[in-house]
Image (tube, rainbow, N blue to C red; front, side):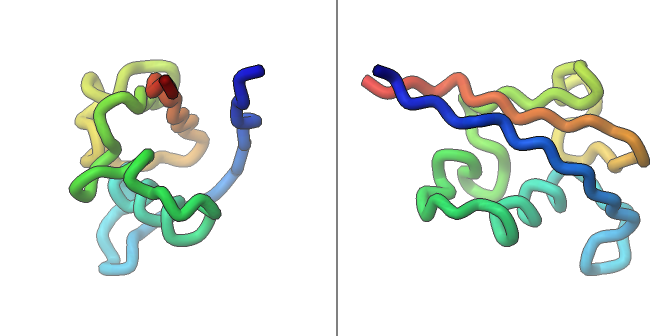
Length: 89
């Protein structure tokens, strides 16, 4: 039987990052890794400081490539979804 992760839904409100700049998806990704990820294999989610290839990122149901990728500034009420397309063999 294949092991799958249960989806996690969070409601968080960010206005600025740690440098006082508007919060963006890059900040959210780092925050998730630093505060929520329990799995030590963070390279399954982030590679070289960005979401790794094989992880689909949706911003309000649109591919993040259409929204500016990690530079997209988070807005109140945004829905950010990370979907792994990586498969075990």
